[in-house]
Length: 285
Image (cartoon, rainbow, N blue to C red):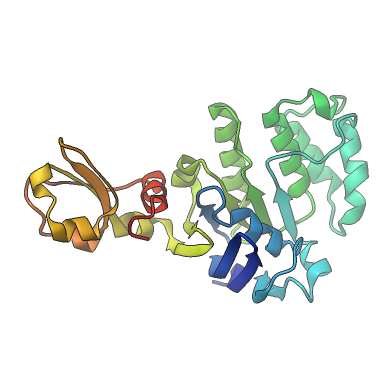
């Protein structure tokens, strides 16, 4: 399966932060969740993919093309939805197409009209009158109406109510349904990724902690809980992000290290959110 997005040894240095040799790839026809705590490097990586900032090293390929040498061609097949809308508040929904369609060779007016109808976006509504959920749907309608094969989203579900989030996730699943389109989805709401992601890339302080299939990430770790007397020195050294009180302890282990523990120790599968929280504590990075 070819890659929709390939990032190799990506490097960017700021006075107070370094994106350090970041590498990952997104297979075509898949959804990848991109997760990490605030300041981990998610937005920097996305800006580098779009060539919005200059990189210090590495290579990025989008649909097999170099994002620097083939930038104009790539951006015909690339679309973005960010957490803020960039359309003018005084525009009406019906005026958005006129403003943006000229930038895309493959703009499809019929498809755009179909999305507006499906998303129940009234043409006479001003941008300023739309709810946050409706604004996200409008941005998706634009992003998906010019034949884009890779959709990059940066926190699109932040601030949405559960119903609007659920609708947006259904839209993304439908978008990749033909197997030729892909989604790179940066979000803090990891429960969204539990539902729709095929792959996860987890970035921590500018380094890739994990990249690969979501199911393999979840199978790789275990949450362990036990009594104070079960916390041996060897277990203490291995635990990731442990918390201990007089009542007991809890932490995360690689699943292979969770074998052979005391019978009283409880072993549970983690969620993506738990994995993110424990590694972000930084005690066993």
